[in-house]
Each structure stands twice: as structure tokens, then as C-alpha cells.
Image (cartoon, rainbow, N blue to C red; front, side, top):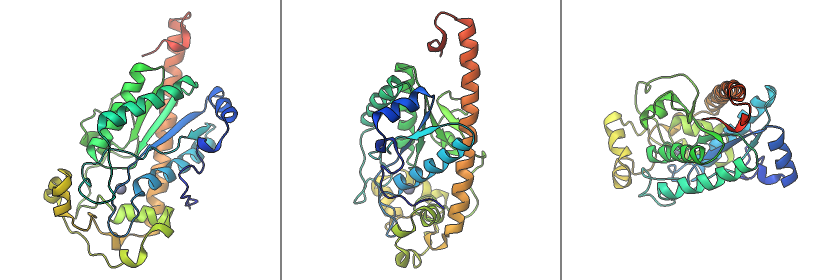
Length: 294
Ligand SMILES: [Zn+2]
């Protein structure tokens, strides 16, 4: 069970002193960072859902990494993301992709300057342009700094936004599966509501949720919905796409546990590969050593 923290600084490096952050960087700690958005999530979930959920996931991932001997600090979540799909709904805010990318580059440069080599960036928001922007910010920061940042995501999402599986700025986790059969459930539906019932049950409007009809839409309507703004508002006037009444906290627990474990495994794999790469690079370039890579 997650601790259900609603304070977005809870458990992040914002609660540490600079001495503590500095010591963590020097001892090789990695950073975990979530990128969400403030966005409508139907009549039953809070607008911060895409921030609360990845924040909870990062706390679970951090615990799993600690079991494997890797110290991780969590960066306070970034929550002014890019919003195309829900852009026409109230309480749904977004910034231009180039604004988000440049903020990411500035902050990732600061983290690299502190000596954090690895930054693992997660997304809590399914919007294609938002996720392309997370990847773009990671890539731009790696090109301009010494950092090894990456976008940690599932193969299906990477494919949807046009990235190759071997993209150097991706850390892929979880099975590579196509869309599930049956009605589409992608926004404030059964899976996302199940997760919130597990991690933040007191923020779910239970009375409302239990009475919501399934949206019952298929891939055709999903394609229209993804065009965003007025298209999305017309296809899903209530703001959810899926079946919130079918949600269940135990299912949320199962999804969260599996995803956190898969993400921790993927991070461990990238860290091992990077160690090998640095060793090879150091023996090939003994003068420049550690800083001479990619
Ligand atoms: Zn969401």
C-alpha cells in the first residue's frame, strides 16, 4: 500500500538540505523525476491525477532500487506539461513544448552540475505531444551536458510517439504488448481509477465514480479523441474514456506493484550497461576517463 502522500514534496529532495543532496550525489545516487500535468480527469478524479500517480510510482521504484543497493533521490514532480487532448476542458493547463523542453534542459543541467549522472524521467500523462516533449527535453539535456538522462516508459507508448526501441534516451520497461481487446480505457477509466483507489483513495469521489456509465468507445473514437481540444470534448463530454465504475483498488495495487518492479529492473539494466561503457571508455581514453563518452 502506498502512503497516499498528497504533499508533492513528500519524500523528494525538496525535504533534504543541500548537504544531504550533495552527499547523495557524491555517493553515486540516481535521480527519479516524474512529468505530469494538471488536467481534468472526469467527474470523479482530481486534476492532479497525472502528478499523484507517477509520484507514488517513484516512491515504490525507489524502495525497490534500495533493496538492490542503489540509492535514489526523487525530484519534486514537474506538473506544467503539454496538454492537447484535454485542452478544451476547464482546469486543464498546458505549456508550449519548447517552453517545457527548455525548463527541462536548465534543470537537468543543474542536476548534472551537482554530479548526478543518472536521471530517470517518468511520465504520468498519456498525451502524445507531452511524451515527445519529455523525450525531447531529455535528449537536449544529454546533448548539452555530461548527464545520462533517459525517458522511462513502456514499449507501446514509445512506439505511439514514433521512437525506436533502441533509442539511447529511452529506458523501456514492461512487456511489449499491443492494445488490449474490448472497449478502450485510456483516461480516468478503469485502470487509472483503480490506481488512484490504491494510492490516493481519499481523493476519489467514490459516490460519483460508482454510478458512472462506461464510455463504451472503440479505436475509431479514440483516434478522434486524440486529435484533442474540441474533438476530445465532443467524444467524451464527461471527460473520461473507459469504465471508472469497474475500477478496483486491488487491481490498482497489482498494476502498481508490477509496473514499479519492471521499472526498477529496467533501471538496474541501464545502470549496469553504463558502468560497462564507462569502464571501456576509461581504458580506451585513460587521460579523459569518465567524462569521455557518447
Ligand atoms: Zn491521467
